[in-house]
Every structure is written in C-alpha cells, then in structure tokens.
Amino acid sequence: MGRQKIEIKKNNRKSSLNTTFSKRRAGLFKKANELCILCGAEIAIIVFSPGGVKVFSFGHPSMETVLGKFLITKDGAPVPEVANGTVLSLLDAHCELNH
Image 1: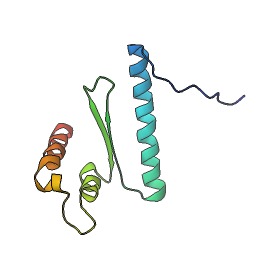
Image 2 (image 1 turned 180 degrees about the vertical axis):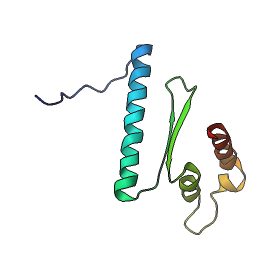
Image 3 (image 1 turned 90 degrees about the vertical axis):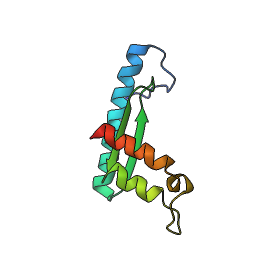
Image 4 (image 1 turned 135 degrees about the horizontal axis):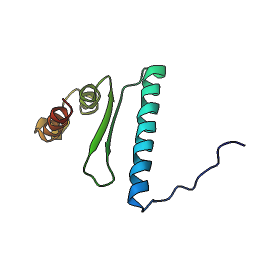
C-alpha cells in the first residue's frame, strides 16, 4: 500500500496549522536545495509564517545574489523600485535580520 492522496484544504486548528506549516516549509526548502544541487539552479524563496510574525528564507547561492539578478531589467538597468531604494531597503532589512 502506497501513500494516500490527502485533500488540500485550509486547516483552521492553530496547533496543527503551525505543525503543517513547519513540515511543509522544511520540505519546500529541501526540494529547493536539491534543485540547486542537481541542476545548478539559483533559487530564492521567502515564506511568511501563518500569523505573518516570522519570515523564513532560502537562497542559493544567496538571497542577495538571486534577488539582485531578479531586480535588474533586460537592458541592465535597475527596476524603478530598486533605483529609488524601496526594494533595496527591504533587502537590507532582511540581511540584518539573518546576520
């Protein structure tokens, strides 16, 4: 007997919600890491906890590197939000929290 398919629906019980979130987040980060190793992909993931209190991130080779590439337009100019500092201030805040 193999794994059974579970119905995907919102869980309203706080204790099981937090447990499910933690397990799923760990699984997501593990799969992202495997994709980086197997394919050489560069990945950035930002996840907010169910209550929005905690922020979790995964970046390979780093969040800064991947977001830096993402926030540059095709012609090499920064995205307008980056040019005026909005996104960079958010990125700086993220870096300070994780270092």
